[in-house]
Image (cartoon, rainbow, N blue to C red; front, side, top):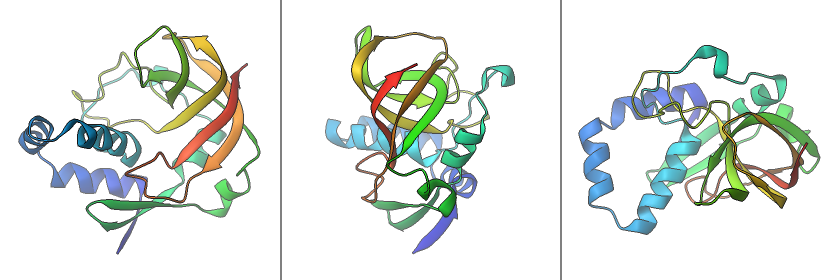
Length: 177
């Protein structure tokens, strides 16, 4: 069993998965596994190389709380979030984040999407700065997709299951404010 924080996990994954392995894996893997891999990459901090304008990155005390989560890797197919007291005190309570929408499904109206510290139009897979922190958002009412930052408020849910199956952190019953 290995315990590492988000930054160590990024470095570990960067060193363990080459670009060739990444492309080969995606071409030879069934669709359900591709979705699982995508979720894993989004939440594990896979150290892909992204270049971005530092002025676009959202930084706040609440994003720092989200970024403080560590991950325990049990085996290749199991990874669990380890929540510290800083984030546990917000569990099942209203929590507010500003960020960028990263849609999970096609469509201009979104009710379930990822919220990121970086805009979607900045390539996560081509530069050197890594995938930003993201959380799952489940809105009570749909909102129109935008490239601009949005502010979301909802109940902070901390999932204890395998982070490779489900996002470890979510804002549920949320609304855009």
